[in-house]
Length: 320
Ligand code: CP
Image 1 (tube, rainbow, N blue to C red):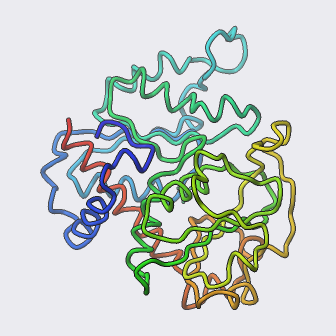
Image 2 (image 1 turned 180 degrees about the vertical axis):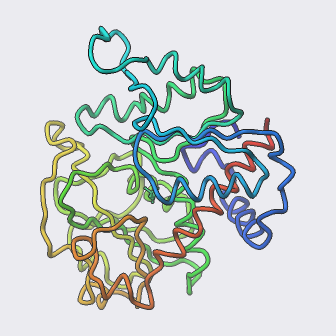
């Protein structure tokens, strides 16, 4: 594997999940694989879990790791071609990327959506420049439209905790004070559609995700109806994806607290597990009681980020 941004990059998903299980029981088995290989993690945006879990995964495989926080200590980077660089940005990404490629063997990129220009974000302009100009294998650590390391960890967690062969999984929108990207729900939808689950998405009108990610999932606008009988409830906020009305792209259309997941909502389900990628705004997205309750999986999900990243880096190293 040279690039990782989609479930399709892993090939057979069943085999990838099997590999994750094996690596979790012996995470240092391939500690020689990454010897004298260097991972560069490039962050245009903040992170706790991705930073720590991906670094730990690289260490499991014996790699060296360099972390670059672009907005702290590096030159400010221009990302658009054709701009007269007379502002505060001292370097262009088109020079910076091949230079970064000189110092490492693999590059992970975190670059969130700007939420101003849908075409620019959905073209994955920044991530694709790394693919094109770094000369290195590249993987997504949450880009403008996808967060595959999170979705893979979420699926590993569902496999571990499911109590029926084909569980019902519900992705529900929940309110948030700020406009957030669609990367997490996009990837979660993509991965659930590829998994052996019954998948339902629920959100207020206007929050329709891009059809390329929704696929054949059932979209139910009535949150209670959607959650009835659910085995897993995955809550997440996202801003307007601009599918039905382009001018609303990136806007907060609703802060309706009736969508906040509390015990009343969880009582509609089949004693569902609660999931969220973190960080989470308590009592906006989910009540204290639900996130602290016995069916909450937020910590196991975060723990499995190390495993998803170990599988992905191992696959990349094996093909170098
Ligand atoms: N879930 C997740 O990616 O967390 P961070 O933003 O802290 O990396």
